[in-house]
Image (cartoon, rainbow, N blue to C red; front, side, top):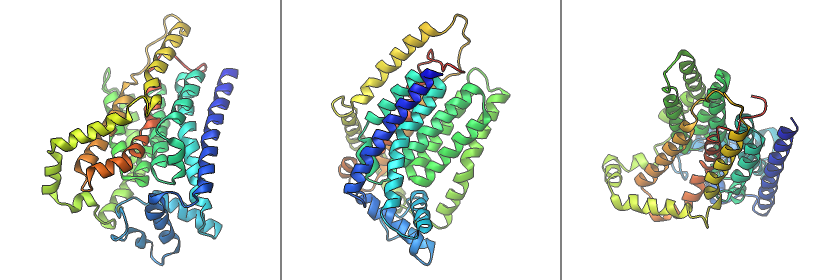
Length: 363
């Protein structure tokens, strides 16, 4: 319809602006920020140039337990182009920044219609320093894209009873584990919440089929990843510190208070105004959709599970900081914003999916 075409054009224009902003910053800093050249691009060079690919998993490298999805993608582009230059990681960074806006918009266009799609694109673009973090060439924006895309597909699978969408949603969740360790937490959270959504009103055959499809999709990338971690990947800093130290940090109330205060600062409306716009936007979409919905419209499947998935993943973030062996204040200062960005596009999808009156025109 014309409204859907207009919404798609607006969302793509917003994504293009984010990509253009990221490209401008990439041209200024073609090697990215610290993690890019110390972790991701260094491993990419080892995968592309070293005699043995296991050199990319050397225990002496920073963050030795980081997964190889992003470095392997960069290395493949270098091999195809014949030159390990800055163009490949820069291009992936720009595409990830644009996709962090385009994918939530596409999901919301299918789920809730043109207005929600445009609102989702603007909210995704306006939250948590997306443009500079995309340009940093870190893995946080690519994993955010996968988590948001997975959540959108799983919501669509539940709404349309579509096992193919559930399979693809699970696949994206599993691929997130190949990009960052936090992707494993998001995969567990997403699958757990999706499974819980099938318990209401009753676990019927179709609901079990959707869950099995999502689990099968996630297993395709996760099983080889877990095998690689068990057989080859060196132990990370968390496990190396020992169970006694982990338990001590887990029970430290002062650490929990420090983490809570840091997260609250990122929730300040002066720091993250887009977060505070979510609820009013959802209410406006619900009000508009309720007026447009014809009488006798059947109830839709529950969508609150998507918010539960984001909350569970946020709990995993909290636990990671609670257990970190690194100086807590330093790690919060240097990483919390970009770690929260991993969940921001997914939160936009989950929140605007609650505008249940706003149906797409062709459902």
